[in-house]
Length: 66
Image 1 (cartoon, helix red, strand yellow):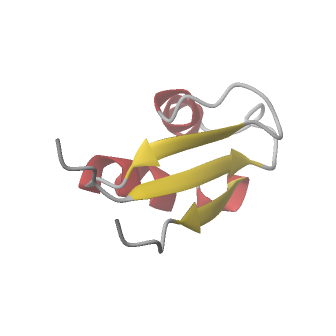
Image 2: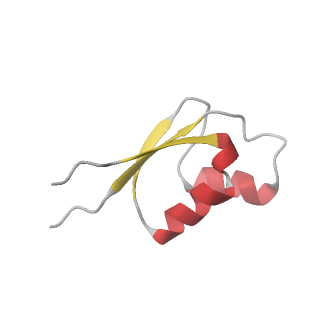
């Protein structure tokens, strides 16, 4: 099975006190607490969530070629 590109997302700011839609994006990315990092497939849906809450995140894109 071919592996797609990956993106590492880290929550760097609190989700509390934010818009409900933004909190839902944090949850949709699988993030629960500050400092947690998740590795996700780089899909349009994930990119949309990242763009919406980019002020809460630190994002690293996988540049390695497999």
